[in-house]
Length: 322
Image (cartoon, rainbow, N blue to C red):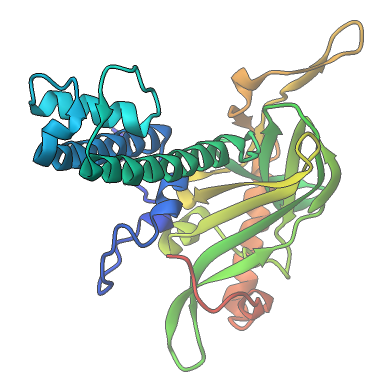
């Protein structure tokens, strides 16, 4: 039986110890980041709580509300809802200075509250997003006689993303000359990191040569390093004329060795392109698998003979996101 894959967590879900928790300090960010259900739920809860609070205040002088015959909390709550939402059915109305003052205060709360709620809903709804599909795996294959790491992504929306640029980095441990070990990010140079227009699919290629941080890598070495690959894409959405982005994180177990991606683009008899996303994640054995494995083994052997080879001189940010 195959070994179960261990659960992976996004870096933003890291447990942060030693920070004072203030849930309402960054409430706007949380509402934008979380689901629509949370945003609507918070707004409904705030609406009900405000009306419950004002209903309790109205209970202090129910005689100040005309036609509130029962004088109970339900009528006070109904009057509060009619006031804050400016419905005004015409049945109940304020008739004492105290209630008039509460109505004025609640009307102000209603105007401010509905303005904030409308702004939050519009901001979340109008945010441009890039609907980019990343293949589930990366592959290591041979291209022009050299080992290469490849990944595939597609523009599922099919709109135009102008001046799209991609960046690939690998997160792996490094040991300094003093013996300090830390995880760092290393840039993996792509053969084509920019495209003037991204509409269909994009196969990004990183050659594993002497200048690559993956020089001499193998399935076993990536597993030992617990390597992670971070892919980011940015561009300008032609519809909104605003910058959009997409990102994906691959881990060492997502790398398929000596395989290649299945073809997803075909053409009809009329010449119209067809992108088959049913096989977008599919990989198949690479007939050159012997070559790629031997090339990688030769690189590893050169590293063993020269531990201070080019791969150890790659630079990157000092701190990792994990």
